[in-house]
Length: 314
Image (tube, rainbow, N blue to C red):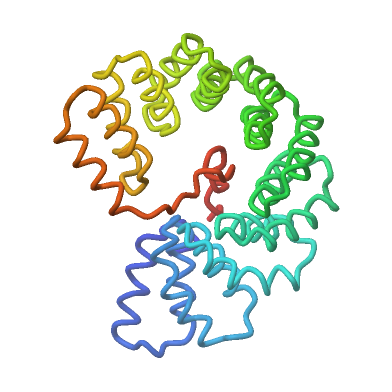
């Protein structure tokens, strides 16, 4: 059945066979493969784990299991299975790319940078590898090396979307605001609807004490995308300074909706209520601040510009 692309029917048949006799050899592998071929990576994991127990030396099963975890976005588990098979197959670019990305999304930046270094040795003109290497170096708190990788990516592919934003963000983190502004504007020439670029341009204008220009950038950003927390934080701060309390309250409330675990928006919202004369609401927000702990990954580049690669091809 699988050879006729009838993977769903095949999976049903294999499950029935296993229900009758769980010890049937090879059926767990066939079931896992049928689920994998359908792109049902989560469903493929259990039968492939059984198949690997049946044949622990099988690199084929280990690879399928690793790719299944990768497709299911369970990246630490993907690393566990992909790492040994990648070490034994140096020339398999897809395998090493998936391992590198799994390391990156597991925030194992040392592993990621090692893998991307191998990829770049084989293909120094891979813009995507330079970008991901830059993200790994950013995670390792190596800002100049990360900047160098994004600059290398731009040399390879100067008009590829998101590279200028990533480079601009690294400059922004390093407080090189003039360089950051240039890159964000370059990004907007490629993608005029880059809400992230508009947000950080607004933030730079705010830092440079240009509130009207900052508000214009930030309002345009939130019209394009309503899920960038920094845009609402900055907008709320600027509107509060202009005593536009209704708008400031709405902005900080949206920032809280986007991440209710961070105390900064609660604190700033409390200050707005305080300035507006609403002592009761202000007290609630300040009480909430005391309950929260600082746990933020907001300064990492990875979640801002990257998504995992497309799912493994069945």
